[in-house]
Structures are given as C-alpha cells and as structure tokens.
Length: 333
Image 1 (cartoon, one colour):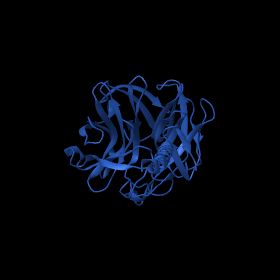
Image 2 (spheres, rainbow, N blue to C red):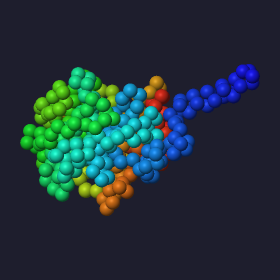
Image 3 (tube, one colour):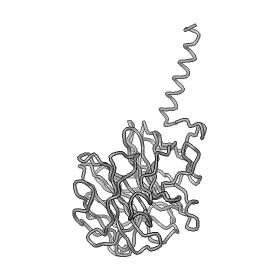
Image 4 (cartoon, rainbow, N blue to C red):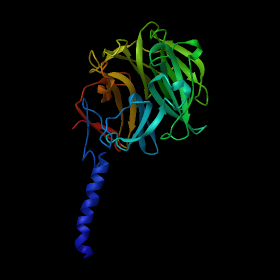
C-alpha cells in the first residue's frame, strides 16, 4: 500500500515546491492567482478591496507588511501582510479616530513604518491634517511593539517650525533614520535626521531643490547611490515624475530627471521596495492611481524599476507582474 501511494505523494510535494519557488500562493477566496494585474482592484484574501493608499511596505519575519491609508468609516491606517507580494491578508487597523482625541477629526496621509532595533518598537510617521482644513500641514508620529497591533499615537507637530505635507520615512544601513516632507506650501522638500528612538526630529539636514514644487517622495538606496523619486504638484491629476541621485543622503543631489511617461502611467509615487533574492535584487515601484472624485475608486499600481547603470533609473509600464521573492526577480508573464 505504501509503494502505491508514494508516487502520488511525491508528485504533490514537487508541485507544492514549484508553486512556492515561483512565489505562488493559494487563496480559497481568490483561487490560484499567479500575478499582479495593474489597473484592477487589489483584493485581499477575503475578496475585499485593499485600502492601503499612500503607504509603504516593510519586511518582518518573512512577511511583507503593507501599511497605508484607509478612509472607510473611522479608520485611518490599516495593515496587510503577504508572503509573496501577490496575496494580501488583512491583519487589522493600526490607527482609528478613537486611537487618540487628536485623531477624532483628522486626515492621515502617507503613513510609513520602520523598526527600531534598540527600542524594539515599530515607528510610524505620517502627514496630519484636520478633516476640512488643509492648512495644518503637520507631521505625526505613532509607535507599537507589534506591527499587527494598534499603534500608540504620540503627537503631531511642524518639524523645526516647517510645514509638513507629503512625506516618506527612510532607515539607512547603519540604523540612522530620516524623514522627508514637503514644506513651504510644497515648494521645498525638507530632509530631517531623526532622534535615536525615531520619535522626533534631531536635525534639519537639507532643503532639496528649493522652489521645485515637488511632493510624493520615495527614497531607496542601490549600491553607492541614493535615489529619490518625487512628483509635481497637480492635485489629484497625475504628472511627470522625476528622480535624482546622490552618494550622500544629505547631498549634493543631481539635477532632477524625468522618469516614466508624462503622467507616470497615471500614477503618483509612494514607495520603492527592494526585493532581495538569491539571484538578484529587484526594485518595485509602488504608486497610487488616484480618483479625485471618488477616493475609493483609486487603484494601486506595482511596476518594476530598472537600472541601466549606477545612476540611470527607468520605469516602464507592465500590465501584469509576478514578484519571485526567492530569486528576487520581477517577472512579466
């Protein structure tokens, strides 16, 4: 009896290994979905539309955690996780209007999370406004010991007295953390160094491209160079993204260069995720395709960022994308 069953069992194991090796995962609600379809709604494993706009992705204990804006009901920030960047499981709401009295009438945008090895805390920075008043222009901070559990809201403030709107958060290889945000009515992009606990700004390092009128920053490092992508300021309408590079995060930075097409494929940048595998490291552009008339019709777009040399970065459109997290490749079936 054992000899008769063994071949079938082996076939099952081989098939399972092949699926895992190519970054596939099975979800009863989605069936055997094998890739990302750009332009369609991204659904979680329960079949619900993912609400994580303006967000970022952090890898923790073998899972990718996608944390972003959720404007349904009294929710502000939600958390999803995935083992393959294709299938996303809803894990909970991290901030709601009841998390703190200061959030009862707030809008929270572009939340980003990094981990502090010293304090053992996950720290979130975000853009804070009042619901019907976009003049507050503040940064806000929250923290949690568990990335899947509600965060403790700490405060909102203007770093060194500067306005703070579209923003991103970056943790360098040496553990130093930085916060970038649009200031002076979005005409300046400010770079700040954070305190060792990541809960406050320690130093204002630079004003990037003063008067450049840039927003939607997304920062990544590849080799010896940092790359910063930003968009122009055209409200909900898409525009031409630009990027610059530098060997030091505090500069000097190169001149801004166009990337993608004239509307960045109808998206706005929010995050760049390195995918490190046993074969290569790829870079995933994460953008929002905003619908200004109906926010919940907005779409998430995942595209490969490629490099022609040490400093030349390219963004091209692909309709479907399959991240292979084992090899680090971004495949286009």
